[in-house]
Image (cartoon, rainbow, N blue to C red; front, side, top):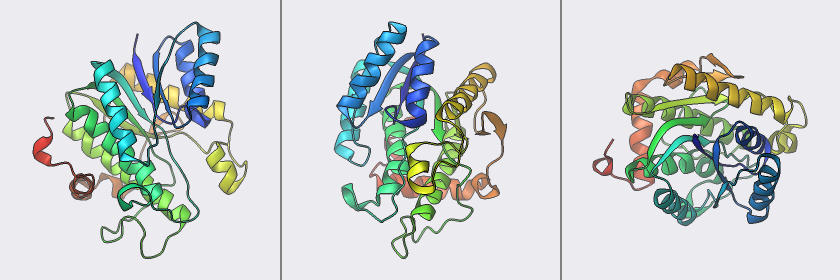
Length: 268
């Protein structure tokens, strides 16, 4: 059976995806911040499918937690078939977390970057990487102000974080061509807690969002595509800026610097 690691699996789309994939026979590694929520989801999956799931507790805004997660995965699994970087946050006010990073930037971009790169660096074989982006990804980038120190706006921070993870997706896809399949998706405008708390219930159901994610997973598995963007479960195109190789490379190098990883440490 395929092993899939899902970040942010205790709420919203991630939770629904976890339940559906368990029903289809996938072996799950579910991540969340709350031990209570993790255990509750594990019990629900066990009751529904008879399958045990592996729990991975950690706060994506703390490098110490990320390092523990990476160590646990490395020691437990020789390979991961799927890494679904799903977790995200929306912060109306600017918040500073570990190492002085702005929280939206940290959780939505730095954490999935660091988790993915570190697992690969540590020799964990990952066949498929799928990053959750958004149709709301920004159409411009300011390398002098990646974390909006000069004028914070919650929506802009969220939009930028989704631009960054899309640029990262395409760069890593080229970097891992022939070794792994790296893609990203917009799951739809979905009534997650994040959407409802900030814009109201203006979207589709969480079940619809999960269906879009799973349709994307199935398409990638069947066609072994890489470097693609999916919208509502179907191949699509992200904004023109995301295909700029120079911007992808520059962001990659700047992010490695920020997370204190040397290019020479990477063996892929």
